[in-house]
Image (cartoon, rainbow, N blue to C red; front, side, top):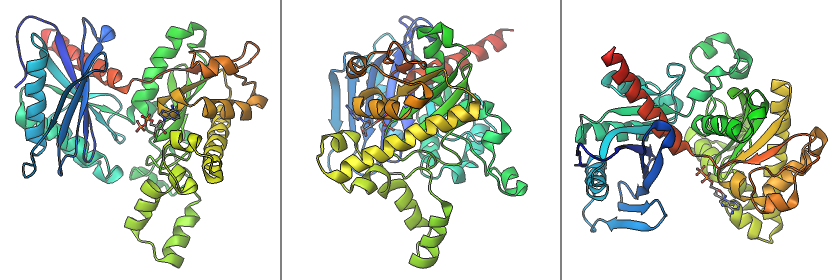
Length: 408
Ligand code: ADP
């Protein structure tokens, strides 16, 4: 069990649980705004051959443990191992809370929430909205509650940031009774957008009230239109399938294609799910890889076509979101591709030249914070995202608010 000395600083565990892996980090710091990650790591191979790995703040590996063949510890045992390891490694630290990334908050959760038995039941009801992710998020919360019942847990939602969107951004043009059932546009990557919404005005105070399009381009990719730091539109919708092409997802696709595949080629729900989540996007178009690095390094024409299709759709969505919010004062690139791919940023910016976007080639290559050319009407930024830090801040914020209300 984790150490609980009365001295030393408070620590917050951040958990991002997937189907077979659990990424974690531990943040420490004097206050919610001064938090720093002291360790990061992951448990992979859950259910088959679990492996525990961790790095310190300098990214040096400080743990690597695999379980012997035949041993197959479940989630509670693995979390027990993690908590013991944190206790041994961060001596003098007091683990005060755990924050979880939860993919779907439905219409009910518009802010982070303390995890209780009731909240867990409410989250179970949301499983049909995110069947590939939500069950694993919930399983990690239940397992942690079993191993360490007194540790406060907080759920932080990828959908919550988009609850500020106007009705027309949230609504599909379908019969109202279906909308009332929850078939509407939720949007995702909200913790990333929220972090950028905090960070951008620190870097460029003049943009505090601006119309900004943030391009979160990772293996999952979406864009968000922000006005004065609030989401007003986004490219992902009911699920994380909509919008721009991604590593293995197609992005927006005419729904008629799905009807055709069902009628003419006998596709069922499982085959459609496999096609849309795992076989499309960069992988499907290139036939080579879902990873942008591989595509950029390949001289195969299909790799170049995949990259071009990606950039075309990202640029198209920047323009669409500018139209949706009625202006474009800044563009931000973030996440794996957005932060690292000089080529993607250059191609997208080139396609947006007509909107007054122009980037400085040297600044772009150098991955500077502000990469727009001197004469660009629209400033362009690279801002590394930090969803874990956002979760740690929220988690400690919820705990602090609870303590305050108890004291009042
Ligand atoms: P996610 O969190 O959605 O899994 P990330 O935001 O970590 O994804 O982004 C991962 C992707 O970033 C990789 O699949 C890869 O395509 C891309 N990427 C990382 N580094 C580079 C690079 N140097 N150049 C181009 N693409 C990169």
